[in-house]
Image (tube, rainbow, N blue to C red; front, side, top):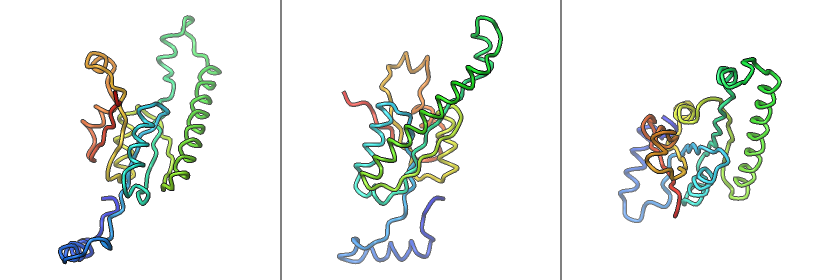
Length: 180
């Protein structure tokens, strides 16, 4: 799983750590961190939080943007004429792609400024499921998500990406709350 050391190497690291004065030269296993980003204040807080953690400059950070493509069936049901407007569908798709590229440029500039090792990945799908699947796919050691701070009723009706990730992820999850 991820970038863990082999048992033999880990055993020698643990043995070295038990010696007096040891610790500063202990190799740290590579952390692969998946941070969910979508351009929201909550996602920016999650990114800011993780990038401020000591040692984050040596992490491999995957910035995941989950793009939920326009649904053709929903478009048909909501269309007054009941017909499918392919041009409008294509236009929405182009706008989503442009937004993803813009988000990538903004975040990669922040990564460079903070001297972080980042990779921006855009994947199609519903946000919660996409985050959970990407954490598995990229062998993330930890998943970092922001939350909007919706109250209980609104979260129950609308659902919550952070709740979904907490319930379904096989990886540790850090939820960065809104600061009041």
